[in-house]
Structures are given as C-alpha cells and as structure tokens.
Length: 258
Ligand SMILES: C[C@@H]1O[C@H](O)[C@H](O)[C@H](O)[C@H]1O
Image (cartoon, rainbow, N blue to C red; front, side):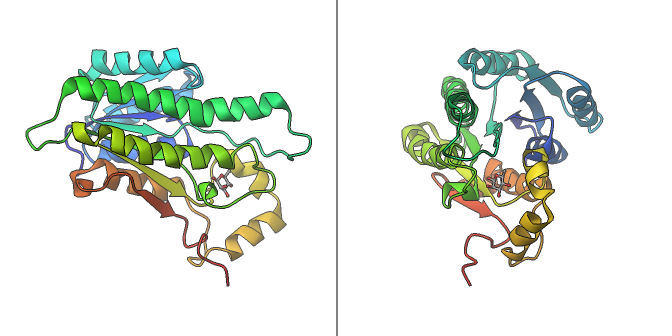
C-alpha cells in the first residue's frame, strides 16, 4: 500500500481522471476527500465505493472558480481527517471553440476554473500543510496538479485552454520553490488525449479520433487509470526527491513528429 494512512483531496473528483484517482489512491490505503461542482449519484456512489474499501471518504460540493470553496474544502478536510497530506488539483474544463469568435464568457470561465481555481485550491492546501509541519522524515506534503500535453503544444480550438494548462505547469514549478523549505513537493502531470467527458464530443468525430490515435506510438488513446497511476507515484514516498517536475503520460504522442 503506497499511500497507507495518507489523507488525499481531489478536485473534479466524481468523474473521469478525478474519479479514477480517488478510487486508486483509496485502493493504495488513503482516506479521500472529493470536491466537484454538484452533489449527486456520482458523488454518493464514489464515497460509498471508497468506504467499502475500509477507507474514510467525504464529498464537498463547490465551484473551484470561487476562492471561498478552496477555504471550505480544506476546512472540511480538517473536520473529517484532521488535515491533508496530498492535494490533487484536477478540476478542469475545455469547451472547444474557435479563436476569432471566442466569447469573453467562455474565455473567463476556462481561466477561472483551470488556472485561478488551481491556484486558490493549491494555496489553501499548502497553507494547511505548512500549519501541520513536517513529519519525522521531513515530509510536509505533496501537491499534484493535472496540467496537459497542451501545456507544451497548441490546439486550434483550444486557444483559451492551452494557456491555462501551461499556467498550471508553471505554477507547480514556482510553488516547488516556494514550498520546498516546508518539505512540500509540487509536481504536474501532463495527460495526453484521455477518453473522458471533456472530449467525448470532440472524439466522436471519426476523422479526429483516427488522427489522434495515429499520433500515439503506443497505439491507443489514454484512459483515466493511466493518469491515476502517475498521481499515486507522485503522491507516494517513492517520489520523495521529485518536486518541480512534470510527467507526460501521453502514450508518446508529444514526441511523435515522424
Ligand atoms: C480535452 C483534452 O484536453 C487535453 O489536454 C488534450 O488537449 C486532449 O487532446 C484533449 O482531448
């Protein structure tokens, strides 16, 4: 069990990469706090599934774009678990849209959820981790932000999205420096094209799907568990000397020029 007794929080945790992460960290021995926009069947069944593994779990509804939700989510972690050891900033949106006609509302919403939300959530988690102090091995906590291959490359219909993913990657580089003295590690994961709700419509176009699959040396689109495994590594003591890093998990898509 790589995460025995660790207290892990996940945003955007009731579906896709977030859900797979919540289940996999629980399977590795962690207690899990989940945040997502709405409470509902997905949240309730996830909490039940984790409790059925013998772990503690709670759900906290709220929009990450609202900084107050960050404060409240951490307060809920203190109430339920007496603190936090691992924070996974996963909540994100990608409403594909052309650049020239991009509505300001779509741009603002994408920036507020993907970057402002990641910033305020990671800051609130770090403030709590600093107040908890280091453990006997000098560990102060692990913050993991879900960035993307799109932090490194562009997307015609993602001009509002790719800057936020580059921003999340950069945020982890700077917080790694700011928080190293507290024994807190900060890293990003860069998923490639992972089949989730976020791109279901986009990949329902057979040409687009075939084009993306052809770009992947491992020959398949990713699944949420492919990313959850990387999160478990970065959350675990196996990554004790890993901070300020970014892990591409894209089946080789990024390097595949020719
Ligand atoms: C929505 C999703 O976002 C990812 O970051 C990457 O850009 C994928 O290709 C896209 O399908």
